[in-house]
Length: 483
Image 1 (spheres, rainbow, N blue to C red):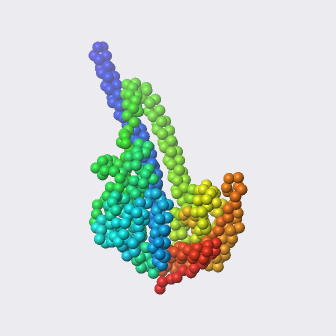
Image 2: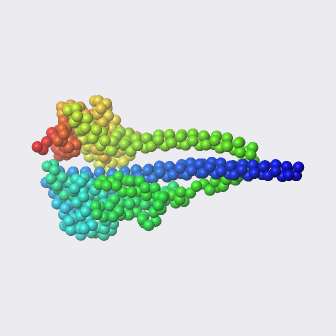
């Protein structure tokens, strides 16, 4: 008996040890899976936050670049204007965006105009070809035939900043010169909320290297970037930056939950009956976690769709913004080129709108813009016609399948509707406001030899012609094809 008892005790002990080992293995596997899911959720949250930061940074850069591109189009069309007129426009652009440190206009790559002049006299007459640091960016913009963002660079007048190089071309496609816009680096980063640690995430920003050069640190020290840091590309004209992010606390698992789960697994391993119960509970928790994760992913997908829609909509007026217009314009150009149908573009500018803001305040000005959009929307004739806010008080109407006569009729109706509209948006509604518009119209049947920018340039030129004619009028110009 003693031997039998000893043998049974040994078998039980062996069974208990085996059960304990099996329980430990199962518990460890469950704990690892649970911690892995939590770590994945934490990682996804950081990814979403960094994506939002990247979107803000791209918006800040693209908004400023739009001013540079508009200025390039202006100086080319304004070849016959006086230097005083060009410098007046430069001062207006500089004062409109506090992030802009200075602007240089360089016909034939020699700086002839600069704003502000007070602290930038040294740069007048500066030849970009003589600067080993700045010439590669200008050369790259000339080669690509579109804007390029470089930097940070050392400036002639001192300091470091991000510089955009926007090449300007005459209507005959010959090179006119370059517009250099210096964006203060600190202001740019501040507008994108990159200067402070936000929600426990630290950022670095790496610039796109020029040919033959190494990548430059725009923000932060490259030596401090952890190997496991998250990296996202930031689209900028002429290249891409890299936004690097890393949680301040690191990618750390929830240790408190880890040890509690481990203790529970140990307890379940000691009691065989509890092992089955714990396994069932763990599976139930796993299913709940999976369901919660699916719901979270669905909400994230929905929020991302809403965010995408917000980035394509003007927040004040609720109509399409310039980004959405650019996409629709490219698609309409392609479709009309394939079908042989006409494509019309109306560029609309509110006359003397700055005076309304100055006299009555921006709140009244915003109310005027909202009412103008309502009137413009009512004037559209087809669902295929797109109304978009192009910038400030300027709007565009994209009208596929509308010929030149129809486009002119639509523009005349818009001008008359706005002129006939009386706004009473001041306190108490006692002071009426009347607005007028200048409208530039252009129509083309795109061919394979045409460039999409031709129609927009001609419509813009027609708009300026309407303004020169005294405003509150419509001017239509034909697209001239270069043989």
